[in-house]
Amino acid sequence: AQKVTQAQTEISVVEKEDVTLDCVYETRDTTYYLFWYKQPPSGELVFLIRRNSFDEQNEISGRYSWNFQKSTSSFNFTITASQVVDSAVYFCALSEAAQGGSEKLVFGKGMKLTVNP
Amino acid sequence: DSGVTQTPKHLITATGQRVTLRCSPRSGDLSVYWYQQSLDQGLQFLIQYYNGEERAKGNILERFSAQQFPDLHSELNLSSLELGDSALYFCASSLTTNYNEQFFGPGTRLTVL
Image 1 (cartoon, rainbow over the protein chains, first blue to last red):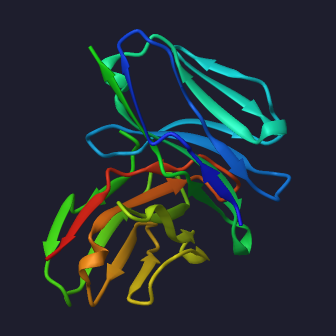
Image 2: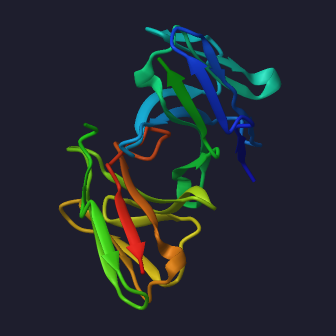
């Protein structure tokens, strides 16, 4: 069965610090997708990024960057110069091919980031 | 705003009751997913519909059922409610089923008293 592990459950940093959120996954599929979602205190889940298993290029979007390493089955997320608005729970997820050919998301348990002013 | 709408936002009910949660996917999306988020189980996949047909089932209880209507909106029916069913229920939609990113609605918070 596929699994996503976010070993850190909670991190607290001071504004402008860099922070890295770890994600390790397990899958036997050769084709899969990895995702990061953000859940701010308001509760909604916000899509951040999707990465396919054949593309190991790092991605940068503003202060956010992602490092995908197939060799270590990791898909880590770094926030540079963190801001108070980054405070949220962050989920890493793996797209698993369920029966019938559909893809459901398997989520990690989430990591609560608190950025203090 | 993801474009996915869910109603109601909050629902408080008693054990043994039945409730219906509603979801409207983003315009053009054919696939609808339901997830449950609880403190002990985290975010878990319940069920998926694609263009009106059930496509995949996850950890969905027999007391729960869902359907997707011709206009592509979906309803999740929860019956014989128990205290443990209290959770945040998310609906997500995607264009098709090919590993597309899923966009989530704001969720319905269900409290069973």
